[in-house]
Length: 389
Ligand code: F3S
Image: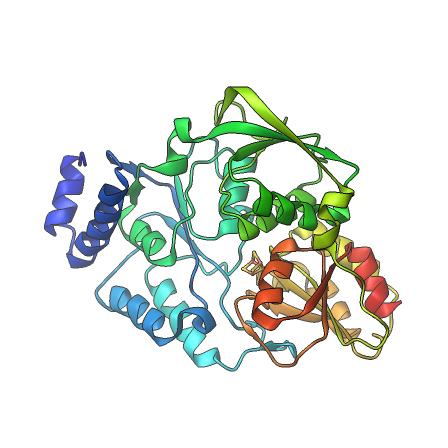
């Protein structure tokens, strides 16, 4: 692998032991994949920071880097952890609080920004062709597909190494030639509330980089679709006609073409719960953007009491506790449970439920596997009606 003079110095330890170790990891992985050089990155987003997921080994790994003097060399943000940072959620089990706060303090000590959200583009919008090292699949696919940024799906340790060095290896979606569309998908008669199910279908059925025609121009629904396809498949980029910036992808001369319609995705939507079922209504995977949050707040205005055995959980960036404090205190008053800087997929739940009702295909994918829930994909309006109607 070609290395610049500066990178060689880093590897020799002239920038300190931690930088040398971190760069060695990147170079080794890059060489094993056949990468020819390293690329400079402008933003790292570190995932794999939930104590519930990484446990003591992960905590020790992060502690080692911190105590050895590791410091972020580029703008670095942090994904959600396993606790509700406000401490008020009755649904999220925040008992590993001390451990999670320890992880958070190590990361913050290294200069990582404590945003604790999976929508880091809320804080810093990537530019077309800008190299990033992001480690949250839903954010990665959003950065590549919506902004035309260049990032692979980085694992937690590799994203951490990139934060400490400012580099990643030149491989995969960092190279224009690998951002090549070879199939087009036509969407027919699929409503916005079913974009989570559409994403699951794409992830399960399409291996190549697709171009989606006639997608609705609703970025919240697109966000849910992209996250869902990245969960059920391995997509890091889905080209969206008239949305993905030009010159950030190539298109094969001859494209295979498939059509997806309602009957194809029906099985992923599932069936609604009965009145007797204990239901968790969940909205916020990926975390709610401000427009979605206000839309849900409006749907809930004037509601009084939840139905028996029906619960509503929202997951949002901690930032909203300041920006939407009035709305949040109203929602809490009517019994809406809010997870700040977390979500039910990277944490444990305090109680069991018969059913998960959500607009997110990613939540369906994981919570079916983790908790064995029955699932149903619905619009926020339908979810609110089910819980409060
Ligand atoms: Fe975000 Fe949790 Fe979903 S981290 S993308 S809300 S699984």
